[in-house]
Image (cartoon, rainbow, N blue to C red; front, side, top):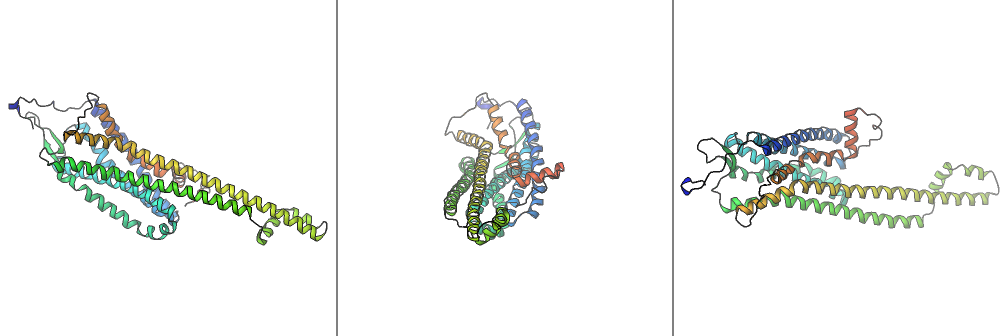
Length: 389
């Protein structure tokens, strides 16, 4: 690559600088936060699985698997990047280089596809609850195992592409874990673009589709419920069971029994029972509409947060990655100039996804949050309020 006879000067030997210091400190902070959050998530989901209803066990199982995947991301991606920026050069040899690159691809594949599986699980639970309760819950373990195998197979090309190569400086022994200069067009340009499609475009497509279906289904059912409920209240007539229950609840019945004629008393009681029964139905309808409205708002908020966090963390990274690939293929002209901090910022954003996931999928869940508060801070007043789903 470098030939002194052609009057080409060698680049400056990389050394530890402010950029390396920032990235190493940033990655180490993200690593400890992610490890703490994901280990807590695994511990609490194990406890919640035993107490939850059958329909929610698959969700907690997938959240636990997502936490495992994010821990692998922390070990193979975040921690190794922090150490690598401290030493600047690669000092792990060929085997560790291949292992790290394969582990990075495997863990990121696994994390993004399990995140997609969580959204698919929620979509099936809302659109086809009977199927979700029986067939889906029985097969979820097999699906998760298939995702682990699928992610491993997709990561195998990393072993073939990356190795520890010595730099061109004769006076200094300097190695980097990188790709060879002798790769063909398929390996150098096509594979990175396919890698981007598999790890970004397909997962984001699944996320957007599933949460769009969830929001649409909730909106349709909410409108159907409001129309059905208005008809029910309009034509509702009190049944004998309603009369018996309501007469025991309202003291006017006893007063009416001992005054006036029997026919008049019966008419008064029936009219009052009918009036209170309709009021009760309206109150119940109002409460259900409030719950439906809260469910819709929560669904909108969670959908926006999940998709936005995923895009915030990975979209800049992969756009930058694709631009560099196209630049190396001489298809476009792209440069950051002297503002290398943009590159540093983009690479740092990608590591935040493993720290965000425990917050989004764990602490935004009411049962998980109450269980976490009770276990860590010993609060007893929320024990009765907590109803495991």
